[in-house]
Amino acid sequence: AAEYNTRLRLARDFLARVLSQARPISLTLDAQPYLVFAGDSQNLEFVAPLSGQVGIPGLYILRLHLEDAGKEGGRLVLVRWLLHPDVLAGTGEVPVWQPLKDQGAVVAEGEDQDAAAGAFGTSVLLETVEEFKISSFGPPADPVTALSTETEGEWHADWLERAEPPLAVRILLTTPQRRWPELIVWLAGPVNPQ
Image 1 (spheres, one colour):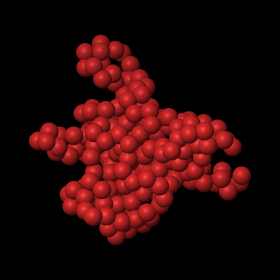
Image 2 (cartoon, one colour):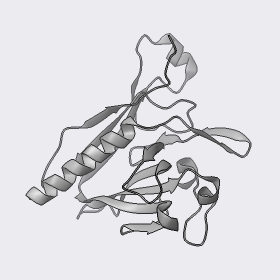
Image 3 (cartoon, rainbow, N blue to C red):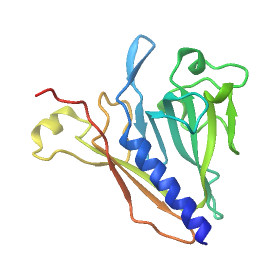
């Protein structure tokens, strides 16, 4: 149990670290800008830097999801693509990256793997996850509602096809052994020059 708690703590620490470094990066898809920050209650995709723990340091598109969720508990999996046109286009060993809104479930199933000298990979962050839920904090999706409300935002189950990233992300992670407090990560917004 102590070893499992350590793995859970490491997974939470890793998620807190990479989410706090998320970058608001847009890619052009079908001649339209697409913000690479999207999520629903079970999936999250964003861009963040990864360093020494992967083959090639740099910015990566990261996709977090729960795989094989069932009565035994699913696996929390992170899939990564190096943010580079050749990697995102796919090769024999790297699946083509498609936006979360188009793809939903993730391509690579299963075990930890590295391909293309570490430019693509999947990592199992945690086994036997009982409950996994993501929500995003930000203004309402409807601009009229956003203008008429006094608050900075509210929690949303989905954050899809938005022009701006959310202000914060909340992750609920429960295992059969342990229920941890919700992880809330405030995202670094654009820097406002003084």
